[in-house]
Image (cartoon, rainbow, N blue to C red):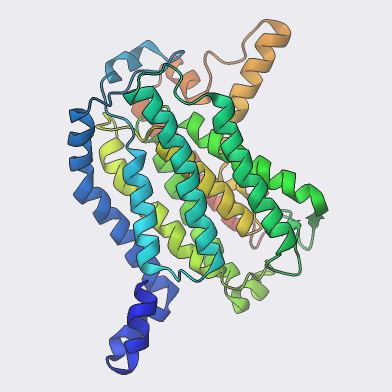
Length: 360
């Protein structure tokens, strides 16, 4: 919005020329997201308490979590607002990458909000029925997959680069559509599963989106893309602004979500973050690289799959408790230790993922 309003005035005042630079707008999108969280966070917490949207502790979690009962949830409303508003202000709204990113944020956030509303406000024990949440995620994945299949942004279409290998690609052809559905749905639920400790999901998400902001900027620049031999995606640089809005929103929310949390993001935030992360990876043709950069989310999801599978097949559990962060809690780690150590692993995985741009 500001790009369209102020950049044309550069002949009147040369200072408006800075709006042409993605780096400038990405930086201020981050600051805007942080300010939204800092200004409206305390007010939202007070309002959620006033309407009694208290969190009920999930089943099958360590006993120490009982003390968290009564903490307001649905804080994802703040996070979604802190993503959407800076993007609307600082990004080029005519860019199709931005439009898709905004749609997935609102769509998956709305699914999560409905789940939180039914569970917390209407006191339904299971919130939105799981199959309806899954249907909403799969629907968006199907629509996005079909759109990208029939409207490829590059001649590479349905191809995906394989990390750590030079000039090695997988062409999914029509299987690209199911792949997109799997990524969107899987990533949404992976972040949701990870959101079990104060600050865990928001901190890891900040690392992941920071990495994809860099990838978006590099992939949208022909010179950098050719030098690094990655997909050149015209216009994808604008996604760096969106990704940095998410980074700012995640860090701003973390201010109130760090242990002991004053507010939880709920499904509103976790599904929105996960859906956005999967969508950005698909748009940047980094589907396989997402496994590396989002390795903590992958590990959390696999721990649940392995735990359930092992119990059903062998009648025995692999972990003390799943998802993985609860396993380490029961090993004696404090909540803060688990969160910070998982952040460290997430940071290392981001560095590993970025190293694949040259280690090929």
